[in-house]
Length: 243
Image (cartoon, rainbow, N blue to C red; front, side, top):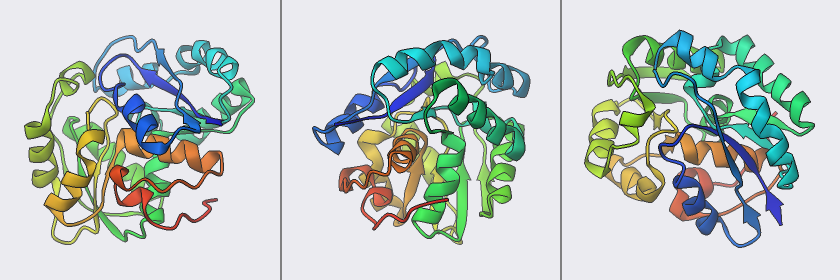
């Protein structure tokens, strides 16, 4: 049995995790702890406060007691807003507090892009323009070529959590680019897991979404290799160990 722990901000699309647990198989558990988000706003100052260690630390002990072998801060915007170096320090601090390997969704995206061998990506974001550009900058620091960024201007995670299939597919289609090898949807408040294979069929290319990538990153930390085609192209390619 492998238990993988997630610190998830607030309540929006957390039901993606039990769905993924079912799809991954009976020997993998995905315990999730909700963190205190403070102000729900896709604004840089609020996002930096959301990702502060003092907000994440209370959930760490609960995940340790659950038997988690790795911890992922399952929030993209609450990690990349710290910049490349700041996001590294965030996960180092989390690892020290947990006494476990740790990462965040932002690094999960960087690793997953390499895993699927995508050279160029398109970003289809729910965020306002300035926050979406910070994610693109983070990816560029990771060596990823970003060919386009589509921002939606949504201010809160709570609103994103109300989006259904129609809004999701519109976001992905509008954010795609003919030169992109993959499309990235970087918001853990967005429900995507039930639609991954359909999204990839619609666009004709791999689609990486925040909750999907968070779980893949935790599996990577735990050195688990799982084939789960219902979770998209990321889970059917032969995995490579990432540094």
